[in-house]
Image 1 (spheres, rainbow, N blue to C red):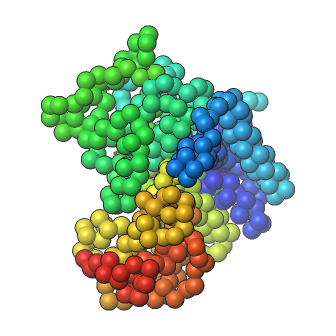
Image 2: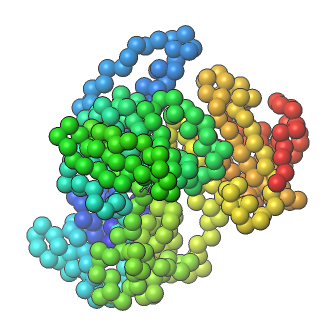
Image 3: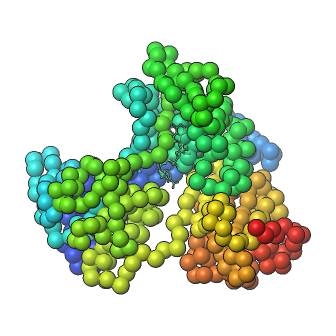
Length: 469
Ligand code: NAD
């Protein structure tokens, strides 16, 4: 097992539970990979603090004022590190309990049946009958930026939370950029986000991103769309960013100096760091490893999972693939990839979540659909929280009214999307969802109301909101 991120440790543990002798090789001292150590988990710990700060501010409109927060940056960092520590310790004990051998160091293939690991104690050779590559990805870089300057951050150094910069520039208005913007804005930074495309989170439908864009436009210093950073100069007083329009047209804003710049323009697979050619495993020129629907590479006893095999680069995709690969290796050959969707969530404020077919994809593919869009302004629960900007959109197949996709923006959208994922996996239609009694008053009702809109049975608003493509 190469790599102990969510995909790697899941595969290792599942394989051990199925009776395999497992060696888990990990370059870092702790298990959990990027997600647990320097990604999903620490960011969520910081985002929780950000949410409480923003909620406390918002409470002024509800007649409760707390005054400005006192930020103890060491305390916040300490809490976050404690969260990571608890989870990595938990993983170590799970590995021990399963008798999984952990070898710390960088592994490179030496043949189709062995890797050499550079450990602190020297070179160790691990031979194998089967191997699962779960070596993940790394932050993408724009050439020519001053990477040796500690004021230029990537997601790892941004999460390290050394301090709270006065002015922070975030290059890339995708998931990492906007999650870190949420954190630093709440802690008091003046945030500018620069995005190459004409909208934020370009992977999600624009109508679902709009409520988020509207809220953060008011809070942040600037959001620059259709813009890129051509140059970053390290000056004594800060990092000077020179802008260019994405299409090269004149009119880009003048250069600005920032205390910190975060680069979050995507991630690249780590396929080229493994000497995979020594095992005969094909890696394309960008570092991806191709696999079949049982996660097998071109070398049948070597599997690959997670970020290294393709988008979306998400922990929950990697864990699903990790289990599948382990089960296939253990002889459960009937098992092939059959998940119908991988949900995506941006843990911003409000959260943005989507799954299945997006409206943009439906249009591009010529899929005939019915759209049901429920505005949270008609949800008693959302109004009670003063957060009625949310939207719940469900696409149903024309005729059968089977769910095709869903997108939600609003508080807890990341939790709410799970019901629609289950509905898609179960082949549910609008009637199934609309006749399922949902607890009142909850945000989960917004999924049910959307189904009622599609059914024409909604009573909490006029039934005309139903629209067909
Ligand atoms: P991303 O692909 O989500 O966003 C990158 C953004 O940068 C895009 O909007 C892109 O248009 C923009 N961009 C690219 N080049 C640019 C340039 N030169 N100037 C300005 N903008 C530019 O990537 P990310 O936010 O870096 O995240 C990386 C990966 O990690 C993603 O695959 C993401 O799914 C995953 N991730 C997921 C979560 C989550 O699930 N909540 C959180 C963090 C990261």
